Image (cartoon, rainbow, N blue to C red; front, side, top):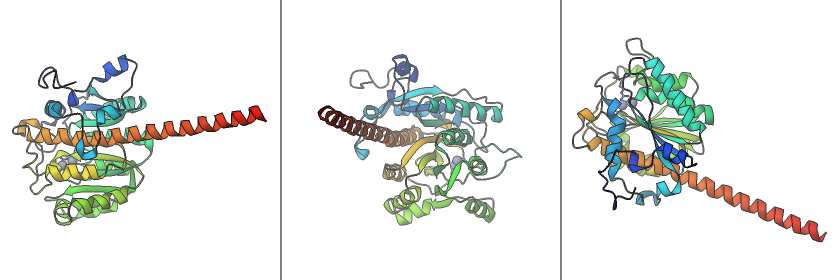
Length: 338
Ligand SMILES: N=C(N)NCCCC(=O)O
Ligand SMILES: [Zn+2]
Ligand SMILES: [Zn+2]
């Protein structure tokens, strides 16, 4: 949508004013990246409201522009990015909601799209990982969050926003040679939380590490750890300081700035990002769209990383095809003269 012709504040919001996936598919196309909402927050332990996060991010994303100078790319020209609407997860039954998210993710991935999921609370990372791993095998994971989210249960419940990565570990979804939390901080239940987390293979780059060591050094380390493995990135918006993201359910002081988060993601541009999620935006606690603007830019950077890779792999494919055709052509000539 050209915002110099149709005012960007007109009409219903899709992510970055992109077409809806039905429009693309109706015209015989296919989405390379599907931006999909999951309005679900029944897994939260404190403030509710992340069910409204996806639509708040869509609203805030009206101001995004088509060229991303930080990654020198026009993501929506490089790949077909489309808004796939919302997954209708049961708000009264967490188990059923988890299944629904997994099935819907299977459907989108099966149509060849990578996912940029907008939560929703962090519970949804588990079914998303299950689905991604079915296609790619165990993935490297970079988990941006104030919290570990590797706790065991809350009130006896196994599927909550504080437990998705312990379940993912137990289910063998993670390539434990390359899993790390980034932005971790704040009080824990006990020292044991860290010991158990370490036993699951997680590395930790704390929010203080980012401050002391700096974005470049930290990003280099993460990039090396991930290498060429298929990578899933999960961003809990509470990784940002409450000054940069007040609109979230379990805020913790001392977090990253939005500038730091965006720069770390840009620094991961060459990693093989197979899908990503962005969760825990709770607009009722937001002010002046601070949180949803930060979230919309974070999703834009993640989408750009995926779009560049899709375009690169298409280029490789067509170069291979040309070489093959060239070789076959020459062999044909030899045959004719011989
Ligand atoms: N995933 C988020 N945002 N928070 C987890 C916090 C879990 C707890 O209340 O201990
Ligand atoms: Zn969190
Ligand atoms: Zn979280």
